[in-house]
Length: 137
Image (cartoon, rainbow, N blue to C red; front, side):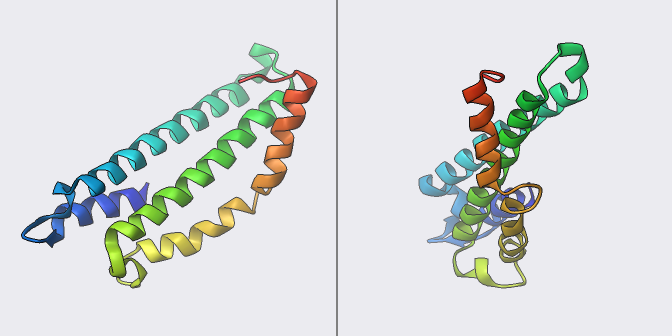
C-alpha cells in the first residue's frame, strides 16, 4: 500500500532529536500495526477472490460469496483509512502538503467506502447471510 510505503520511507529518512523517526517506539508501533492490518486485509481479499473464482466447485451459496466479498471490501477500506491516517500522522505537518503524497491518498481514498456498495450496505449483506445461516466466518 502506497501510504504505508511513504510512511516507512519518511520514518527512515526524517530525523528528530538527532535520530531517524523509525528509532522511536511510537513510530515503530504505528508501522508494525499498519503492516499487520495490511497483511490481514490482503489475506481476506485473497480468500474472498479464491471462493468467488471457484464458487461452483465449492457449491457456495451466492449470498455467502456476497457476504465474504462484502467483508473484504469493508475491512479493506477501513484498514486503508487507518493506514492513510497513520501515514499522515507520521509525516506530521508535512502530511498535509501536496508535495508529500499522503494528503492525496486520504482525499482519493474517501470514496472507496461509498462506491461498489457503501460499507453500510455491505454490512447488511453480511448480517443477512449470517442470519440466514448461509455464511459463517
